[in-house]
Structure formats: C-alpha cells, structure tokens
Length: 577
Image (tube, rainbow, N blue to C red; front, side):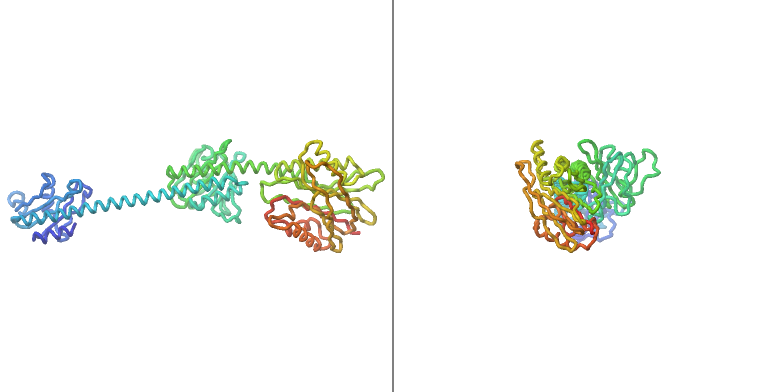
C-alpha cells in the first residue's frame, strides 16, 4: 500500500499520498499507509471519511479548510475509493497538496487508474489469504483424516491382537505394544478388582515395557476401591475420567477431606510429571473388571473422536482381561487337580526315589502326565516289600486330560491291589478292560513296573511298556541300557489283548530313569537324538549325586526351552552295598 501512495505522489506531483482503509472493514484500526513514510495523514483523513460516508465517488477539491472558520490551513485533496470484489468499499487512495490547486483531467484519470490497480492488488491479497486459509484447512483436515486412519488401524490391530491372548501377562504385554506406538503415552497402568481392592498388573523388567504399570521402585501395593484416586472413581462410577494438569500425577491424597477429588490419576503415576491422564473403566459381562489408565507428559486433547477410540480400546482390553481371568481360573483348577494327584513318594529301605514334574511353558496347557509309586500287597509266599512304579501320559492338554489321568491312575492302583502276585502287564490289561466296561475314553502311554527286593542288595525289575518312551538304566560304572521292548499304547478304541512283561536285575548303585515324551520331544527336533543326549548326560552324572539335582540338571540339559507339553522325570537308585 505504501508503494501505491508513493506512485500517487509522483504521478500527480504532490507532497503527500496515502492509502486510507475503511475503519468498519476487516482492517479496522489500521494505520494509513503514507508517502513519504512517517508523514502526518491527519489533514486528509476527515476528507476520506466524508468521501466514503457521502457518495463513495471520486472527489477532487481545490482547497479544504478555512483559516477564519476552524483554524485549519487550506489544502487541495483528491481521493478515489478502493473497491472490493463484491463492490464493497475497502478504503481510499488519496493525494494532498499543501496549497490550493486545480486538478486536471489527467490528474483525475491517473489517480483513478492507480486506485483501480490498488483495488485489484487488495482483492488479490484477499483471495491469496482465502486460498492460504483454505490450504491450511485442507492440510488440517488431511492431518485429521490421517490420524483417524491411524486410530482405525490401531483399533483393528487391537481387535486382532487381543482376540487370542492367553493370560493376564499376555494382555498386559499386547496392550503396551498397541498403545505405545500410536498413542505414545508416557505411562500406562492396568488395575483389576480383586476382593474389593484394586491391584496393579505390572510388567517384569525383562519384558522391556518400562512405561507399563508402576515403574521400578514405585508403589505397586493394592489400594482400596473406595479410595479417592481418579482410577478408583472410574471403576466405581463406571465412567471415563480425564485428569488434566498437575492433577494427572502427584502424591497420594492422604490428607484429603472425605469426598474431595484426588490429585493423582493412579498410584502408579505417583511423582511422575504428567500433564494429562485418562482413566478408562474395563466393563465385563458381569460388571467392571478394573481400569486402564494412560498418561501423557504433554497436554493431550481428548475430544469426542479420541474419547470414542479410547473407549473402544478399553472395550477390547476388557474382553481380553475377562477371557484371561476365566482361563487363569480354569488353569489354576486344573493345575491344582493335577498336582493333588501327583504322588508323595514313599520311603523304601534300600531305594532312593525322586520325581520332577514340569508343566508346559504356556499357562493354557495342562496335561495328563503323571508318576506314581506305592507298596504292592504281598502275595502268599512272595517276598514282602515290593514296590509299584508308574510313569504315564494321557492324551490331551486340558482339564479333561488331567481328570482322565486321575481316574486312570486310581484304576491302575486298584488293578494292582486286585491282582496280588501278578505282573505289571496284568494290571495294565485289567485297566484296559475296566476303561472299556466303563466307557472311559482314556488313551495314552504308560510304563508300569514292579520292583521286588532280591539277594545281596539287588532288586528285580519287571515292567510292561504300553507305547511309552523306553526307560533307561545306568549302572554304577556308567554303562547305560535302554529298555526298548514295548507294546501298543493304551486306547479306548482298541480291544484289550495280552501284554508282555520283561525283567532284569538292578544291582546296587544303578539308577532307573522313567520319563514322559515332554522331556525329549521338541518341534523340529529328533526324539531319538534327544534320547541319546539324555543317556549321555545320565551316564556322565557324578557317582553318588543326589537324584533331585540330577533330575533338574537332566531337564535343563535336554528339555525344550519353549515346552509345549508337560514333562515328568522319575528316578530310582538302588542303594550301594
């Protein structure tokens, strides 16, 4: 605008030119653009105002002012309105001469042409500003759409990733992975209701998700559901609570008055410098399970769309938590059932017994592996002190398999006591007949053996193998023998038939090892190679080593790292003479 004022002074040979903007327009309050810069525009401003107020047409006056009337010096004024794209008046392009003068037609035409160019420039600036605002609005909308797409992808991943979680630890890890990459919170806390208290579900330091749960060394103890923490209110009131400013983190409201709002969002955020926190209740089918809390170290806007995303994410998390709690309850019952049926080994003079049971690495897998040892009833004329040994594996990895295992174990014991003096093969046959009569759908493998004391500290071993991995015997001098002979496995669809029984003598100092296939079976590996490895480690055991640490070392050396099946190791050592 200053350039047009300067051009006007040159074209019309006047000392002062200015662009005056209509005060009622968008530029209300703007200072007139004058040439020369810093000139005082006051003599022309009233004339510009009258021009716009009266008829908004060009005005060229030879003199303005009267020394005798108002004390103002006379001057010549020429002004042309500046017109916008819709005909609105934007202002005035004016020139001023300090002395009266007659304006020529060329003066009027030149100032009018210059005013038209100035008007066009102003309209172009207006359109450019409109385009800029439209571009910024489009860029903002594109950013918003991109964020919405990211949120949609987040929810899609959440629906997929949280659909097959197997336990609370898995839920915790996957939620941390999901929100850590998209929402980028500085802190995450997951609390669950248990017996009227809120418990943190925290990660192990080795998991690498340090933002999840209470950081190392911070408060992780349960806290009351009726406490003043915002997360507790979110659970009690079944609604989302957003905490802003210093109240997103702080110290526990120990001295807060009853009913006063708590300052920190959750005890896990105690002392963290967070600007915003959101407490999202986890609604299950039977009530609120707990809450998911997200905290950011910078102000975080939680609008309608963001709230909808967070609420949906909390819904997926609640479904995963409810499923994990149900599965954990089932697994706990199954494991308790399974462990309750594992035998406490008897004390037998002349023998050392030890057993090791390791469940599958995955919490949702319980199996039918078992071991057993019990005294045999003495048959008329037989040597007293005989012992029955069993290691077996019922097919399946669920509670049903554990329940069937308990029934089979008890029925095999009963078969031994119902057939005193008979061999282990007869007990297995009796078990199969009973399962068939009772329509018990049990299938699997087992080694059943009888140990009877013999002369000079020796023991006589008789065994029958129903499709089970072959037992190993290692003598005091380190020689290993594999008891390879076996019959078909146990299966409810097979007609019971005769079973074989082998025997051998166990000299003092030798060890008998029975085990299930969970010890030597590994995905992608060869069972025979693992059995050979087991035999080598057994042969290399130091003489006289206690059986309990020996079994642990064998499991560490041979057992798969990511065990998908239970494993049982059962060892018997004949005392050295």
